[in-house]
Image (cartoon, rainbow, N blue to C red; front, top):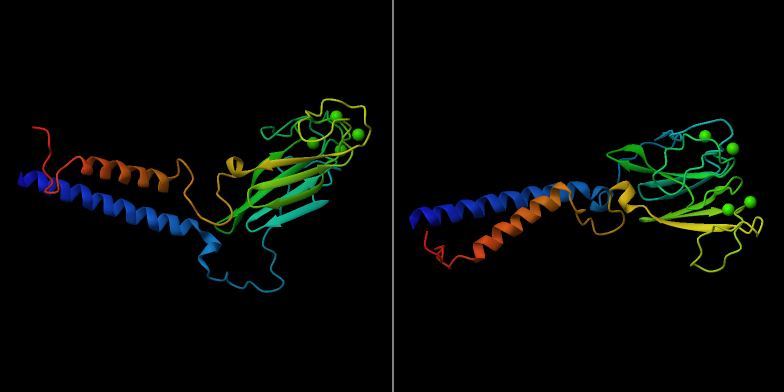
Length: 220
Ligand SMILES: [Ca+2]
Ligand SMILES: [Ca+2]
Ligand SMILES: [Ca+2]
Ligand SMILES: [Ca+2]
């Protein structure tokens, strides 16, 4: 019985250590949300030089930009790939002036391109990226030369009978960037912090199966 009490104390000690490590990791992941002002780098310090992952002549990368916290979105409305959605690489050039948008995220002072966005109905000449906006995990991209005749929010954009009618696309970029932006700093599923907290939860669940004296109810 004594060994079981010592074992229970050991489990609790490990759990406490896991929780402490999780809290420390979590706090370190809050970045600029900890209330401390960032160090002043001076009025002439350029922090980053951003280029597209598929730079090519006449793409007009940077015609539109938007920023929210550590996220920057850049439009390139003359970009030419025929990719659709969020999984393309932009290597193709058969979608003349279809346009693209790029999402960059700053982490640890380093800017990295985290997403390459294309319309769901990419077509030549649509100009996707002529307007961009970002707020938290939500990125909005305009395509003022898009041509479908659909109305409202239920269309697929397959039609091309309304020349230059235009369209707007809304993306949730949280699964693309892997970060939880905005307030909260809750650990993302599968992150080291969430795994630590899950391990702690399992430990406590096992602990609750014991009596207040730490004695296992079922015979060994
Ligand atoms: Ca082009
Ligand atoms: Ca290209
Ligand atoms: Ca058009
Ligand atoms: Ca179209």
